[in-house]
Image 1 (cartoon, one colour):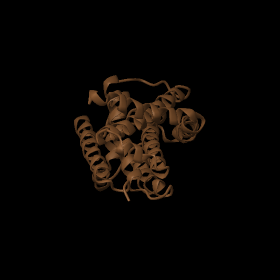
Image 2 (cartoon, rainbow, N blue to C red):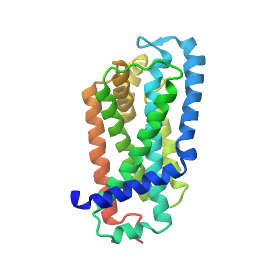
Image 3 (cartoon, rainbow, N blue to C red):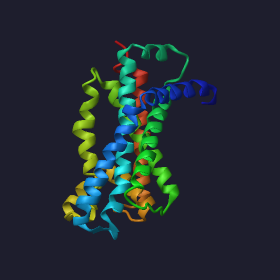
Length: 255
């Protein structure tokens, strides 16, 4: 892998320059959107809801909102970037270059992770204006945000590989990713649900990401932390293998 370090670094830097060049469109909107969530759900609605899990409602939802921004931006960055590369036919330059396919996957994944983590940091800073953040386990916070951004960066890459138009890269975020995120325990504890729906909720992988991240801040979680980390690692392994296989076979890339 070190042999191709320059290639990996080049793809990563290209991806970072891409979203940093238009930072007003890529980094600022998530901060504004999350500020509205903090005001509406945290201050206005939260004051009526009261405590949840032994914490104020604002404290409870902050980790989920940060994670939601990480998920959305990690996914959208790679999905739009890789499809643009396909659309402009510049992907052919990568495919014929003496660069292994796994370096291409890692490069785009790293770019998506960087944007997701940067947006997550920005949203965390914004949240400080609304609530005093406490940290229970810094290592869990860092590990969760890195693994989660990797999962959705890979998901965005797979979406872009299959996409045949710019409309195709918005289908999964709209009809699958957004519902799973809102039902992923961002705004509520699944312990409030009836037993049947608690069981159903455990099928949603975002439940594990949000709760692991919340544990890092508050020390409370609706799922076992070890299971949550295991789910993240399994998803990364599976999605990386799928993305690598698709690129090797040229699915959606060679006509």
